[in-house]
Amino acid sequence: MNITHASFLTLPVSDQDRALAFYTEVLGFEVRVDRQVGSMRWLQVAPKGAQTVFTLSGPGMGDFLPGSTQGIMLVTADVDADCANLAAAGIEVNGPDDVPWGRMAGFRDLDGNGLMLLTEKEGL
Image (cartoon, rainbow, N blue to C red; front, side, top):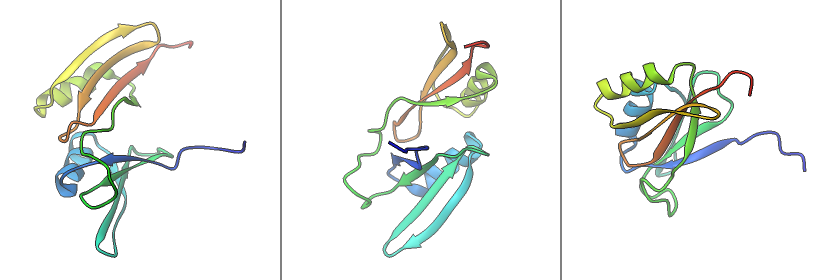
């Protein structure tokens, strides 16, 4: 096997503009691709400097159901500060809690896709 990385993850969303605002304005992601491909909009965002991007897949782009993606782990330098920022933006956050591998919290995007924030414990 010669796999080097994941190219993109699909996040099914009901409204690409609304999802774009959430991922860029609330989470601070940057737009990597935003173009029309036939009748569909190919929209990808990612944390600054990330190799793997998130495709915000709108209606008509496959059989994906908004809110069906769960368990995406996002690593952050300060989970507590990020949780406070999410709460200030009106996003319900579960945690943060201490776990053996660091400090972690969970939240959902506007369509119900489940994401996690993790500040990794040093030395692991």
